[in-house]
Image (cartoon, rainbow, N blue to C red):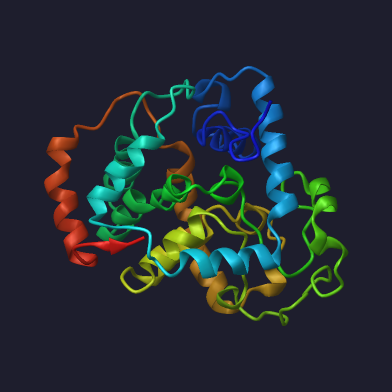
Length: 284
């Protein structure tokens, strides 16, 4: 029986699905990255059925009130990464690396390409919002493609048929093209479905450069940065910043490899980089 809290065997199954939907010709194929049996696809469908059913406008506002008080825990950034290691799942056949090593692989790929240090740090931080799982949040409220709530659901979102179960789709306040928003109001005025992207953005918004914040907040917004389904809500500044979101996307999807980074050798560099941009501890 599939649990509503954890329909996926691993949080990485969602990323496997992304690789199959958005393959890049210069990277390995989805089959070379992971080798899941076909039943895993059923868990992805079930994951999105739950996500699309329960991610309503009121649900998102409730989660913002609950988690943006940042009263759950206080840790240094490196401590957050180590805390995330409890999310390691033996069912991921692609890698036996722990979460810290995965974050370092992403950031080291960005660093190797000569990007600014804040971009490197963004790669190191990008999945840290997944600590929501350790606070009891169900998977469908932590990972998955994100989308605006409070307006009509685009048919460019994965498995759009499951939005038929979402009460907002029958609520005339929320089921029109603009819903509670104004044309080209800017994404800063739009509530996105709740998950690790929005949570991390809210933690980091006072510390990181704006392009980094856009990467954190919208890297799972595939219906826009791949499908351009919500351009009518974006302003000119959003369009400019989304160049960075698209630049980040390949590092997010394709940075895993079987060669583990040597954490002890990299830690001094990252501790210095963290200290440059962030306070000693962060409230979660």
